[in-house]
Length: 426
Image (cartoon, rainbow, N blue to C red):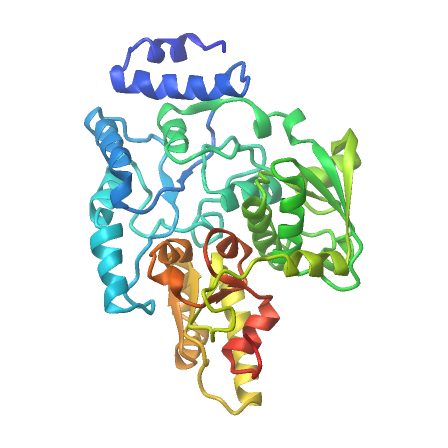
């Protein structure tokens, strides 16, 4: 890798031993993937995936102390993934003991570290840092130093920014150094599609299912998706961006997709069209039967597959304000039709703190509360990491949550039926 004189000086210790180690780490990262140079990080904010003070992350906490002691706070401030705990989310005494004493006992220490390292503010915790209320929406072409798979794939695909699927800590080092190695999705060639996905469904595909199918097929490669114009059109409006948020999260978690192109819709696909497709790209055809096959393939790992649901999570990644409103209206309609006042399964909707503040100004927030729905800022994955919670019969319409935990997947329509008391659901 060829470094600039300024970068070489940092590597040689011009700003101390700890900064030299930061730069050496980035150089080793780049060398691993054949990068020939570093490029500046030019977005306003970074984003870090680590937001939880797990006991097992002791070495990370110690590393962060070294960075802080060396005065290496990030010039580029950053947002972070959601917090792991919220007293409003249903949990037992034993659940809370495990959370607070055995799992996240370092949370206060870790959040103090993040403040010193440069987190934007106390509310800057969300996996959807790019929504308007959070304020971390990079512009097309900007180079990012982010981690969090669902945020990276959204930034690359929907916003046209450039970011590799970095691991935790590396993304913070890129923000501290101000540059990252150039390879993969930071290059024009790395952003070209190696798969063509032809969607031939008769009805609008469930975002989570379509993303899951594509992710499991193409894995870490770049898909160019055709056939969605009949449902999404050619404008990146709020409704389409929300659809792509959930679609992309599924491609990134059920596979390892860091970038996708939607023909006629996403920025690079609109500009370059099929010139984005590499010669010899593989083809994957998706119809309604294929989506049903994919859904049927999901394992049910509950101890009792016929157990009644004990808890429902909606919002992984975090929900938008409009999603909250749409769900509240849908729940209201179902409850009225069935003569019910409240949901029949304890249900948690998750969103960023900033979105929740906006929601609290509307009747939707109080409507959800009256229906028994808990609105929270937590990360459902962090909740489900508790071994006691893993034993619960948890349901979700998030393919990311299904992939990483014991939660059982249902479509949004199925979830709505279950939490409003439809008989015969398991």
